Each structure stands twice: as structure tokens, then as C-alpha cells.
Image (cartoon, rainbow, N blue to C red; front, side):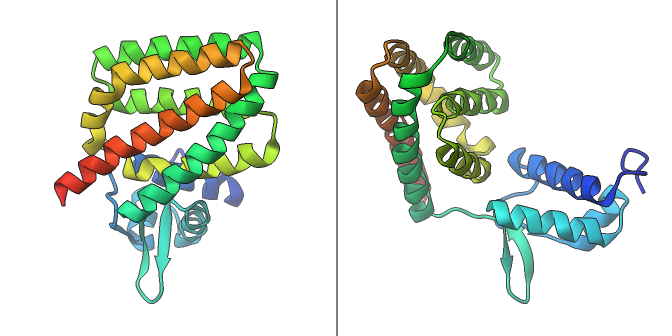
Length: 224
């Protein structure tokens, strides 16, 4: 067993392996559609197959990977239909969350949102696309968490867990194209939240997500 994993309780081991596999998927080390073999992962991590099997089952539940009967487990591969559905769900639910967040947002929340927008500009200049995506996710997370609606928060956490598996390194182009527009849209959303303008915050958030969906959809169609 790996020295880093040796001595961990079974539950801790399961969660740590799930975290590492998830991170590898998001980093593009495992590609969409790639099969994940328990034996190979167990050897890689220096553990038995049991915690690997349990970790993969957790990832199936998250929607990061899928189980194919009689074949095994593979990384989720999104279609255009999946993309449309996912963004439609996000646009509706994050729009609703922004409406509620406008009623409850705090000064520290607003300060954090401004910091994140500035940080995105910095990492964009360094062409650190993975970091840019992480900061963008955190921006959205701060807003929907500020909604104080537990069901929305849980559901959006689940959507965002699945979401990056199709937003890997091949999407650096849309990030570059969207950055200037993203910055304006983000700042407009912050202004609406600061003004406690619920309807405006909801409308701007929906438009922001729908525009991102359109650009990525167009890119995927151009590749087919």
C-alpha cells in the first residue's frame, strides 16, 4: 500500500481514492469514454480492489462516471443533448438561486465575488485555464450558496460535480473568447446582487449561462 494511504480507515481510503480519480478526470488524465479498471487503479494507488470499487460506485452516484452492464465503468461522455439539458438546468436553477441570493447576500460575499473576478483576470493573463475554471466555479458557488436554499445548493453542487467532465483542456478556446464578456457579465451580476435587485440578478445569471452554452454548443457542432 502507498505510504500516504497506509493506515487510513476504509471509509477515508474510499473517499481519498474517489477524490483522486475525480481530480484526474477533471485534469484530463482520464478522457471522456475511457474505461476505468479496478485492477489497474488498485495497483496505481497501492491498495486492494475493495476501496477502489467503492470509490468508483461513489463517482457513479455523482454522475462523473457511468456503469455499463457487463462491461465496467467509464468516464461520462457528454452529447450535445446532454449539454443542452445540463445548461438548461443550470440556467434555471442558478437564476433562481441568484434571485434569492440578492435578498440575502452579505458584504463579505460581495467582496469575495469581486476578488474572484480580479483573480480570474490574473490567471487568464497567465493562460492558466484550469485555474480559471476553478475560480469561475467558485464564483457561481458563492452566489448559489448565498441563496440559503438548501435544496438548490445541494442540487447545484451535484450539477457542478458532473459539469467539468466535458469542460477539459479542449475548451481553452471558448474560455479565451468568453473572458472579456464573462468579466462584464460577472460584474453586472455582482452589481445586481449588491443592489438587492432580485429580478435583475436572476435575468442576468440566466443570460450569462445561456450565452456560455451557446458558444460551447457552436464549437462542438463545428467539430462534428
